[in-house]
Length: 274
Image 1 (cartoon, rainbow, N blue to C red):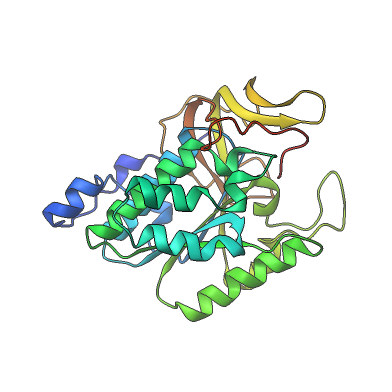
Image 2: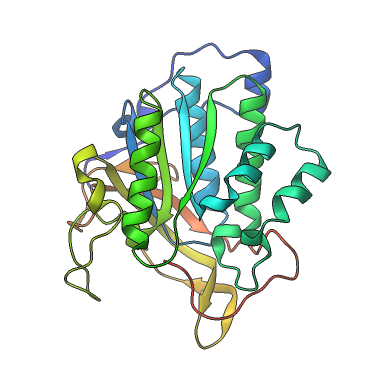
C-alpha cells in the first residue's frame, strides 16, 4: 500500500502526570486519526492484537487532553457493570462482578468477550484512575433492527457528549460505509446510517496468524486464518488508501494470536457474531 502513514510520523508533544505514565505509554498517534471525532474500527473478533491496538490508540488520544469514549459491541444492558468497573480500583471482586454479567457468561462466546478484551478494559480503567478522560460505552441494541439500534445508541451518545473523541470497535460488517454487501444489496450498516456524522471507517489488516473463531460446523476455538491479510506493514500503522470502497482506510495489527474467552470454560458453539 502506498500512502502509508506510520504511527511514528506524528509525535504527541504532551507532558503526562506520573500516574498516567504508569497507566499507559503515550505512543505516537497515526496522523489520519488526529482530531477525528468519530473513528469506526472494523475488526474480526477474537485476537490479542486488535484490543491492544485500541488501548494504545485510546491512550494516545487521551494523552492529548481530549476526552475519549470507547464504544464496544456489547449489550447496552452491560453499561452499569462497565461503569462500576471503570470507576473502581480493579480488584478481583470488581472484576468478578463485571464478568458475572450475561454477556460474559453466555454459552456462546465469540471474541467480543475475550481475555484480550478484558485486559483492554483494565488498561482503560487504569488510564481513568490516573486522571485521563476515558469512558466506555456499550452500544449493542440486539434484536431486530440491530444496525439502526446501534446507530441510534451512538448518535445519542455523541449528542450528549459533544467534544469527546468517539472510538467505535465493531465487527467489520457494521463498519462498512456503503449500502449493500455480497449477502444483501439493501443492507444498511450502523456506519452507513451515521454517514451525516462523517465517521472515519477503518478495516483491520493482519499478517495472518490465528483468532478465536466460531463456525456452524466445528464450534468456537483458535483457528489459523488469512482473513484481511495484507502486505507486510508496521503494526499500529494506518492507511487512508484502501482497495475496498466500503471503508475509508485500514489499520494494521501484524500477525494475530487467538484470544480465548475471559471466563474459563466458556467455549461456545454456533456461528460468530459479525
